[in-house]
Image (tube, rainbow, N blue to C red; front, side, top):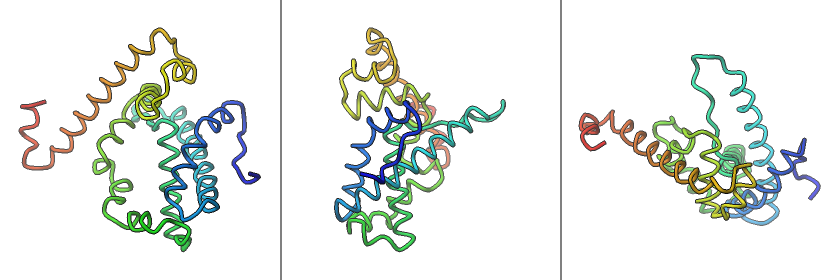
Length: 199
């Protein structure tokens, strides 16, 4: 397809090869046809790469005393770009290209959770973003994408012999982040004072 985003270097080309199919599959679920899916996926992929580059630059340029920029793993970041791009289509009068049920969801309170303040976003998404990028990427590829560990190790440049132990650590980190974020979220309600009792 001539309108696909062109990778700028070998790393971007590898990322494209690894991530294009999930992005296109998700775009297909969100749209009313394959042509619209290809357009949405292309626009979202370009947006996602641009945002990742911008966040990466901000992360390296951030000074001391500032919280470092945390990135989602590549595939969920690009899937987020699909949702954000679809929402912009809906907002700018291009919503007819979207699937009717998805349009209803975009205008619901459930969709608003993903764009509101971080404290109101889904717990697992916050926890994944709070992790170090490599840990989050390892967890996503092994658990969500269900890739074999040797494939994950090769993609991430990890020692295959140590990947099982690193995945166990990543699971523990994710569980801890979820627990911490859950307790932090309870601080504003009447039960917040009791959170420390069972934490």
